[in-house]
Length: 117
Length: 153
Image (cartoon, rainbow over all chains, first blue to last red; front, top):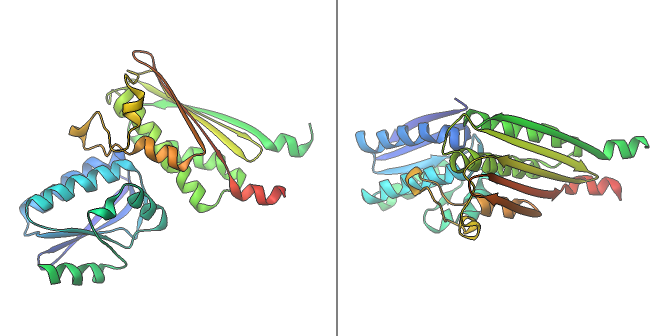
């Protein structure tokens, strides 16, 4: 698998760090892992940390949007942070920033989510 | 043919099984071929994304994820311009205008974002789709690699 995910809980916020490439091939794995985390643990909000995400295409957008709908239906929020330039452009082109905020760092995202919750 | 002209023309063809494992293989291979034009990191990353979108479309839509199908990519370098085709012999597209609409997807159950064509059109200078239901789909795209242009001037 060309993609690893590191998960870390900060109180009710789940930080997910992506390392590698998020495409159609790795999307199913991401979907399953995130859905489990959203359902089984005490996850109110999610931060997607994208510093080490070396590649993403529209399959990644699809997975992110799907998880966004899920966490939103539970009353939670999603944010992204630390995206590389190409990933940022793709997220921007897809209109993702109209529905969720982007932060420069995990700590910025965390403090913002902890304020709203 | 002078050495410079010989360098300015090049091509390659790549045929592989319609398996999702090969998406990464395809984009890395095309990127390696195009690196001879000395593209910027941004250009290279755009091209990788475009290859990934086109190949994923072949696998998911052309073949309905049936991995017995094959995908063929050709890439041709002419001066500072790269022309690529990505082709399948799958189901074809019934309504091309609809398929190209941003955010439209025929497979919402697979959580497709519907952004594939939009991304290809945005990242490439030209993008042309030929599709016939029951025969297959071919997408032909062109992009001028800017960083090389500086060398020519």
